[in-house]
Image 1 (cartoon, one colour):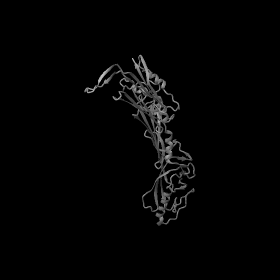
Image 2 (cartoon, helix red, strand yellow):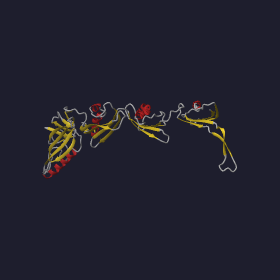
Image 3 (cartoon, helix red, strand yellow):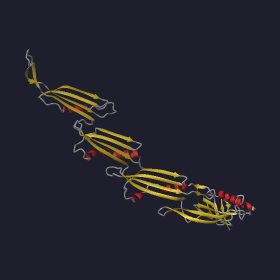
Image 4 (tube, one colour):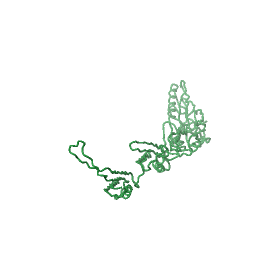
Length: 466
């Protein structure tokens, strides 16, 4: 005779038991877990067995004595016994045990109760009952059945990789990046120990299955028909979702595949003005750093900007927007802005085709030459009553000739209290415009020096005779 006990309490008469094993598999047929469906079908008799008419279960060997139940009270006895069974099987995880009468080779598990039903009938002196349970592990004589080996108790699971092409350019040579999305999810099952204690909630079982599978897989990229195999991985992000009551756990992680650790875009524009006859060209760029294991977004953006900074001027000429006009390599303006939080560097430069400065290291310079040319020298002779006005009498000579040279130069600001004044070079340039004649004299000469703002001006005037 066999015994059937739950939480150490026997069901007598011993019920019929059936076991069914199911495997949990992914859609490709990979087995990720297994479970047991257990069905217990027995009979409760009003005047005998366990539980008794008081709802108490027998816990010893042998059989309990019969109850003295009046024939008119058998229905009440049956009802009390159904209450006792429902109460006993109201808690999950207790030990369900089937064993021989001598206690050898017991079969045990810690099940989850699915349902309890009692058959229809008059219930005059007995009723049949059916209990459905599920268990993840069944032990025989203290050892788990060894036909399977699943490290986690998982009901369902999935792992998905997705690669999307982006229209976000890396640079001129590589106009595309890729977004890789990896989603791993699982639904776990509760696990009880032999004492009926919940060892691990279902969602933690799911997490234990998901966590080792996270991370980037080069094999996925190598098998892709769209992704750039030489691209590196950047901007790794993870989103985590936990549903405790559903027993599920999911992680979605994302990477950006790019051929460089920073992305760069720029645009070039050209403006021609009739006001000054100059052509102006400007370039506006944006460098976006990517987060990687070897550098932050900002450090990667700075490294990228350092590598392209020297080629900014050449980019304007390389794009054939100037119609063969030559620009002055010294920019009119240079602007750089940095965002440490987003790892972005924006830059802007403007050039024009003005002449190259003559003063070394100057930011700007203005050179103006004014010539006073020879004119006739005459005197007016006034005649009283002459309606046409005075008579102009030529003296047979002309007025003097003069030349003025005015130069204004702005040099870079400096923290030095005594910045260098570019007077010698400026005066040398002015002397180059000195007139050539038989007699040349300096008529006027002056200079000014704005030390704080680095502005120097020099003016000289000659009077001369050919």
